[in-house]
Image (cartoon, rainbow, N blue to C red; front, side):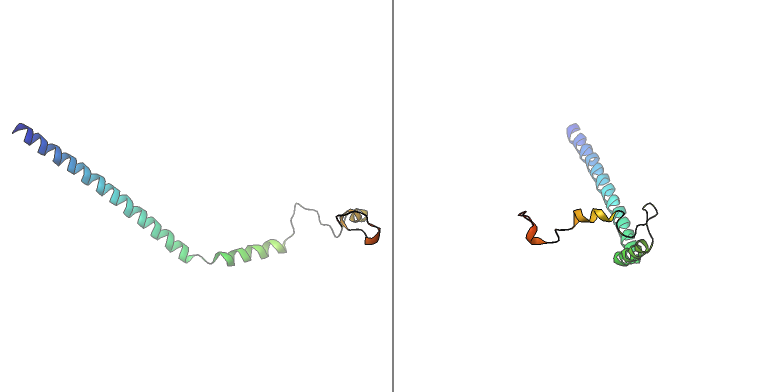
Length: 97
């Protein structure tokens, strides 16, 4: 009789702990759901990302970079010869060009 009573007390205690865990998990899930719904509402109120990117791009393109010096062409025109191909292809004996 004593063992039956102690077993029933243990099962009630274990059951109440299980209920507490379940209710705590349920509250956590409800809180996470509310947070995600708030995020969705904020996203719906935002304008499209492509429109914002276009606006930023137009602002960046129209303003010169203050850290770069303004140049209008090559600083040393003789350097162009290194970046251009040979003027006359028949005189070039390299296999690449």
